Structures are given as structure tokens and as C-alpha cells.
Length: 457
Image (cartoon, rainbow, N blue to C red):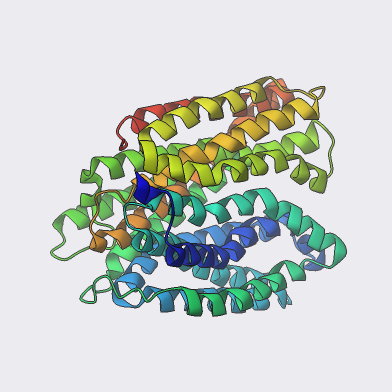
């Protein structure tokens, strides 16, 4: 037990350096949401067109994720990460300088693509650096930006828009890049290519990228129409599922290594964590959409007030984060997830009964409990995904984890938006929100089943 009390200084430096490099993409994904009204006005365009700048970012990120695996196989991971962060900074400047909505959307696509290279690199390089003894504690550090994005992004974005303009939402990324790049050059070790003989799996990458785009776009169309039964959504979702089937056949009969070998799912822990992460992203990211809407529509809070009202959840995440990694290394992922699901339900079930008269103090307490426990669900699932894998399997596993998380968060957002919209139309806003939180709690409880197959110490 003595070997798990402290992370080596070099590993800790690498962890925090990579975390800093990932903060800008995570924040940027949510900060722009707060500036939608200003962007619509400045570009004299419609809300529907501006939404493409948000949806396009997610779609471009999904396209880039499979390509990142090949880059890690062929080149030094440190150099790939630095170049990706620099590219993100440059595309941020261009997005801020945009003179038309079309140009703005193009630069947001480029931003999303560079972010899609950074995200899988972040996890893979930390897993490689940490080794099995410190993986839990290190993953708890590397996933910190995931918290900052949804929790602090809207607050910071609202403040920037109020005191300056929407342009500075993008310009601020340059400061982060200027700090992160020198630190990466100094603190990160070299990460030799995982497999220099790896060839670019063009068909596999294209199929997975198009599959992700079709599924995410289909899910977003369902959210727009408040129904999964609309024609456009069904066409895109069926296209995505068909492409998944095509990739499965291709992977089975391919004579060389594919970008995401489905043999990874033969590992019981990878299979269990994949299911768990998909459910967790639905149950956790879905309410992140409807909670601000509840604050604004039911409690009549302003946008920034609603963002501030979410702060207890973020504080809860931060308070328990460092302890979660230690507990994973001590008792194993299985026990941590099972206990955390129970606590998370304790913080989620009260949301089913909230109304316009609910005290913000009680609501803040429920959100704090929920925030304090959700890290105990996602961090063990993420760290256990890499358990028992060879070094050559790490890039492919990272691709799989990121695709699953992207689809889960997109599906969760669309599912809860659809449920809230449909129920509100029939029974009113209060019942609509209650239904959304109830579905979130049910999906959260389902995580217990894949958690039973996780590792234990």
C-alpha cells in the first residue's frame, strides 16, 4: 500500500501541464453558448444558423477523434499535442476575427477538429505516463477540465461578453496557449510512436467519423423537434447505425489493424466501462442542459444568475476529485462506482420534486451532493477502461472511449431536451422538468449493472 500514497513529481507535472493544455478546448465548447444572442445580432443572422457554430464544433471534434489514434501511433505524442494546442490557438484568433457567419462557422469547425485531436491525447499520454499504480489518481487530475467546461464556461463566457465582447471568448484562448506550450516543452517527456508501422486506416476513420456525425446530427435534430420520431432524425440515426454495421463487418474481415479494433470489447472491463460511460454521460450531461433552463424559466433567473446557481455542483466535483483517485487505487473502481451511484441518486432524486417555490438553499445542497458524487462515477469508469490493455491498444482504446462519451453526452442532451419539450407541451413546464430529471435518475441507477464487472482490489 505504500507505493500508492504519492504520485511521482514528474508524473504530477506532466498531468497538470496536459490539464492546462486541455482547459481551453473544454471551456470554449460551452462559453460560446452564452454569446449566441450577441452573435445572432452582430452577424444579422438567425438562431438556427448560429446553432451550426455549436453543433459543427461537436461534429468536427467527432471526426478528429479517430485520426488522433493514427497520429499517436506514427509520431511523438508530445509533438502532436503541442502542435494541436497551437492549432487551437490560431483557429481561436481566426474565429474571433470572423467577419461573416459563414466564415465564423468554418473557423469553429477547424477549432473543433483541433480539439478532437487534443482530447484523446490527453487521456492516452497520462495513462502511459502514470502506469497501473497511479492510474486512478492521474485520471482524476486529467479529467478536471471536463468539470471546468460545463460548470465555469457559461459563467466566464457571460462575464467576458458583459465587460468586453463575444470576440474575447476566443482571444482569451491565446493566453492559455502561450502559457501551456512552454510548459509542455519543458515538463512533458517524449512519447515515442506507439506503432510506426501503422498505416492510416482511411476507410475505417472515414466510416467512424461519418457514423459519429450522422448519429450526433440525428440526435440534435430529435432535440430540435422534441421527438425522435421525426423524419430527418430517423434518417440520420438509421444512417449512423448502418455505418456502424458497415464498420463492424470491415473490422472483422480486415487483414490489417483497424483504427478501432472491435477486439477491444473482448476485454470485459473495456466492455463494461463502455456501457457505463455511455449511460453516465446521458445521466450527467443531460441535466446540465435542463438545469439552466429550469433556473431561467421556473425561477426567473438571468443567464449569469442561472450559471452561478450551478456552482454548488461544480464545487462538489472539485472537493471530492483528489480523493476519488486515491480510493480507486485503494479499493478498486467497482466499489467506488457503486457507492458514488448511490450518493448521486441521493442528489438527483430531489430534483424530481422541485418547483418554483423550492428554496435555492435546498437546491444548492442537492446539487452539491450530486456534484460530489458524479466524479466517483465517471473517473473510475474512465481509468478502468485501460486496465489490462497493451501499450499498442491504448490509442485505439482512447478513440473508443471518446466516441462513446461524445455520443453519450449528445444523446443525453437530446433525450432530456426531447422529454422536457414533449411533456411541457402536454402537462406544463414543471411536469416537463420533473420527467427529465426522473429519466436521468433511472439511467443513473442502470450504471450499477456494468459497475459489477469493474475491477476491485
